[in-house]
Length: 166
Image (tube, rainbow, N blue to C red; front, side):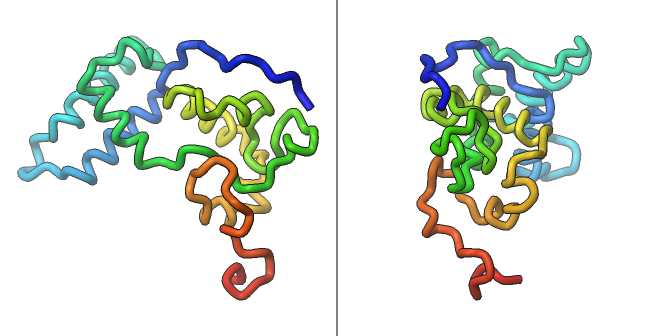
């Protein structure tokens, strides 16, 4: 098992795809009444998005994000699953990287201390890698996951059971 390190205190940026996802979430949540105007949250996020595109930046600094844009992003973030855990944690068996969710041992251990942007950067990395079981052999289990870190395995139907069968 890996050495337990102190939680990373790095400033993690918010990826442009998360800004875009938040904009689209707000557009669906609060549609334009006339097809032209956008809600305040979309406008705040769109300003950040436009500056990122203009300056060809892929990350927005979490700490210096405008207050209204950060609040809108955090509202979207709260609608996403918190942890990628699917209750198959191989780090507890000594693996440095979990076969179930794709996080490192340190990421699993320190997940509660991570900022929302740091969590989203881990989500982005494991999604881009696509090698964790949550993305292939246990994709159905990932769809049933609530985002709670280390849910009880009883929350998932065993393979081949009536509730888990297609």
